Image (cartoon, rainbow, N blue to C red; front, side, top):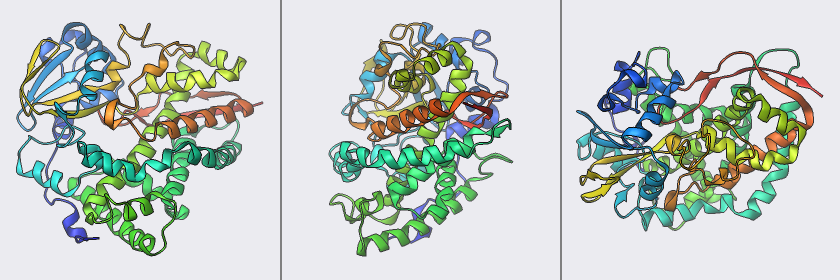
Length: 439
């Protein structure tokens, strides 16, 4: 394997993505009804931290479902907010390429964009056939046989965590349950030392965190330094697995035909993708499931009365929560979407969070309905060649969690509104105070 130094693994310098720049300027954005349609910018992270995104997307779906914004650092980017448009673009990798990044990055063609793309490129930021070959390397983690083998371990650990929860005391569900369970499993999938498992959580948190004073990271320099620590840690694991491979994700990447000769930084891209995919998404759905059932107590009553509804609850909470708000594509030629002219190299954001609330597809889409007949049509896992390969594993974790919860607790009650992630990409929770009542 060709190995770059850790200093080469990440681009130097203090650069900002458009999402980060808008975070500094976007506080106090008016309600959707107070803005002209041209002024609505769904990428504003404040809308998500303040849980005010719903009306902005509802208005775009009604009035301008293929919506143009133009920002100096980002160039032109389009927001797709209707289900059919999002699904169509996500399934068309020839005309809408992933090769220039999965989230909104810097202006296409800039030196910084090229540096990022050339050094850290996970397979989600590739097109077939390269994407197909690298994805195949780690696909075995979600094979049915592996899921059957993992379920007893997931159930055992879930039971232990739930049994340790204090009764009659307020505690943080995010840290105590959601992060703990997802990080335990992620460490198992990587064969990562359990005593260091919270490092995986930290690296996941900083990947898309917006630098700000007192935030997850305070500067791009801090982010770069901590991700270099990630590179150094995994370099050691790669060398160990080269000699003593196992049935884990690191070994799969080190020995896979499509990945074994990749440089360190390229491996980092795939590792961060797997860390975020296995950590942020599931943990935020776990937290969102408790929050959602508390916001719709009739649905909580229905679930406790009939625990067999768990299998219907899982796809519905994935639709309602949608833990990753969007993915980005880049148009490879001039074409038309929804009557709008998309130009070659325009960036196109597929807003899953909006598609999953499309009233033309999901009746009373803002409501949580655990008996929704078409909940499994949600786009929380994407669509097409980039459909989340860990989808079945995430569903398994959610099913097991609620099967174990319903067997132990009369209720999990939130004590205050949650604190939410400062990001328009990761739609999540940083703190959710709850109390439990045991049976």
